[in-house]
Length: 247
Image 1 (cartoon, one colour):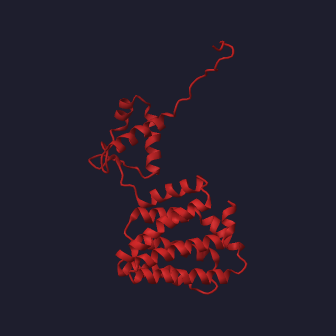
Image 2 (cartoon, one colour; image 1 turned 90 degrees about the vertical axis):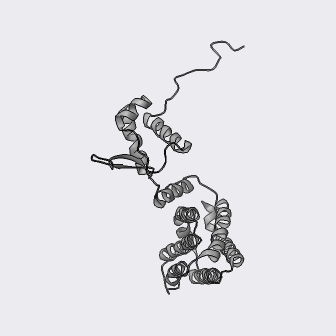
């Protein structure tokens, strides 16, 4: 048995910030299904009393959750005033996902594998479901990328728009949000790698050809071909931009 002198050293246990406890309490109610979109939170004073925390902690928790798109607040009086559970907009979800992907420092091969699984499904769904308007929407970034002497940054952003348009055409909002988040998190890496390519026009020509092939397969409703072409395109781009793996 260890003596008092050699035993473990005990010290004060760090406590969570009050607002974090309030956030956790609100999230628990959402996950349990007792709070859903449109439901009001109790008034600030009542919520602080129920949770036995300070009103300042409740106020800060609401501010944080509003910034994440989880809550919305309306000032004034009457039925429309107060703080309510919000239907999280796609932009807020995409922003959170983008930050997570960026800060988690995933290896590029992990991101490539995830993109292949995700975008194969998106391309196949687009081939099966895309409306004429959705197919035409994909053509807009393609036309931009076909522009001669297009700068690399604009090309990259149009490339992203094309892949997001495919996911949107498939009709799965989560797929499109994930695609946009992953692409946005890789933007700086792609641009840096693009700038190091010595024969840019040759690479751009290959990417254009592959994009048009994917678009044509989707337009013709050939789901398996569209999925295969997307996978080959992602793998080919990753191998053509080896500097991506240095991050």
